[in-house]
Amino acid sequence: MEHIGSSYNGATKFGRMEGEGEYTFPTNTRYVGEMKDGMFHGKGVLYFPNGSKYESTWENGIAKQGTFTFADGLQYQEKDWSYCNGYDRRFYTERCNGLRPAGKSQITDLHPPRAIPDGCYDCGDGFYNPSTRVVTAYTGRFLRSADDQEHEWIVRTCRKAWDEVCGAEPEKSAAARCEESSNVNF
Image (cartoon, rainbow, N blue to C red; front, side):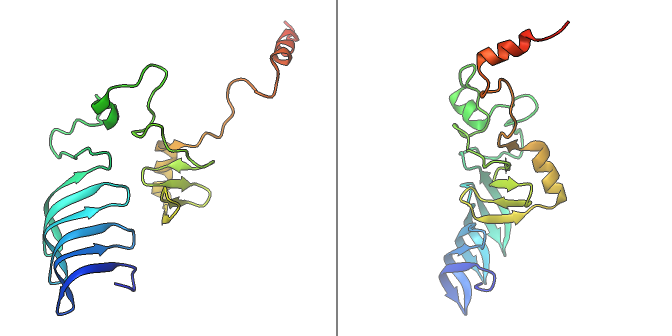
């Protein structure tokens, strides 16, 4: 385990995980539950660093039946999934708490949304820097390097830090803008 950065705290038998325990992956995902012969076996929960979790019954390291719950409390349903479909694009918190007033639209499930570093994208589990092609966790820890397919998806889909000037130029006074518009020749 120490070679790959994992750790285990719990019961063992013949040097293998056995009984109740907690296994932590190098990504800080944690499994808490029953073990048998060095594998997840019985009831256990995977806790992900973003706050989501997967509760399952495991057999010889394989999840047989389980439920996934997002960090905001939304539980995934395999059948009749109505969250964020083509007909209803509201965020889960909007479904639970109602829509925000006009002009105060919610652009993420968090309100207020996370501030994105300049030139980066919020890709759901962290920030993506397209110039380095690295995704870092919201805490600043390295998560992964993006391949071409993930890069294209993030750039096409995810919310980006605002880096474009639009609207009035704040450094120009109203008088200067008026003067420029009156100098137009017809």
